[in-house]
Image (tube, rainbow, N blue to C red; front, side, top):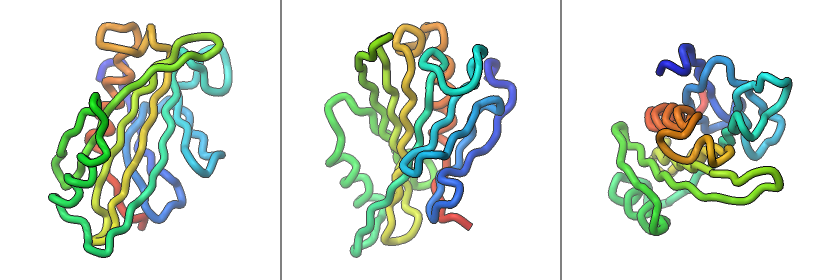
Length: 169
């Protein structure tokens, strides 16, 4: 990816019993101060902290237990029962499933686009894990292919599609 020459691997949450491993650009900052979600973002030229024009990626993870166990057909049925009309759904290699959607909202200084990904993976016979990714940014830069910084969304799409959820070691 020409815009991002170097990557680093992130395991989120750093001390969780179930973690999602994925890559982000090497120069992105990581903030794990909030226990409910990690915040990852490009460090802006003007100083510290996240900035809407640069975009912000929030990551969280949850799991769902089933005494009947999770197998491919039961996971597929469960996920499909939760889909909304415009959600994109893909079965991925390695027993993973990806749901993708986006929405818009108004902020005081800009209109935001929120790109959402939900990555599902069975991590134990009774445990279905879901890693949730939200990339939020200014819509005129990150909404669709051809927008000035849409390459960041494309990069995240590729990296999330190959992410792995696993029990922490």
